Image (cartoon, rainbow, N blue to C red):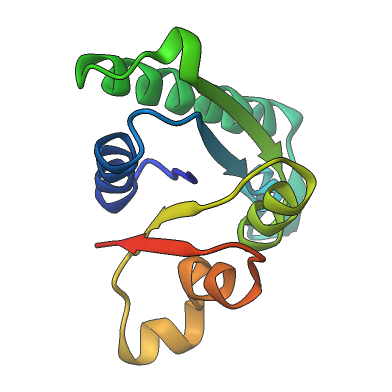
Length: 139
């Protein structure tokens, strides 16, 4: 299951634990390398510190997911795995699914519609179209 720290992502985790509580669950978070790029009046620049902080935030998100699953009674020691990968979110999620023994994917939907959906796209929608396994989108 992919998690981004949004309310929908946490609901997706709750759904995965509830529906797949006897199975192995991998909590995946993707750190977008663009999080380390900022614009100022003179152009853009890249900071390694900001990037490192983004990776640490991804690791903290995975730890929080493990804690939340444990609170729900999920056996995290035996059945939960976490992973932090770096890249473009929808691509990295699909690549992870293809490269690992994943048989179902659960993601949260931000519920964008109209212009914001056209401008920003939907990771959940892109993953659903490209994933080689069934995808559950949780709102």
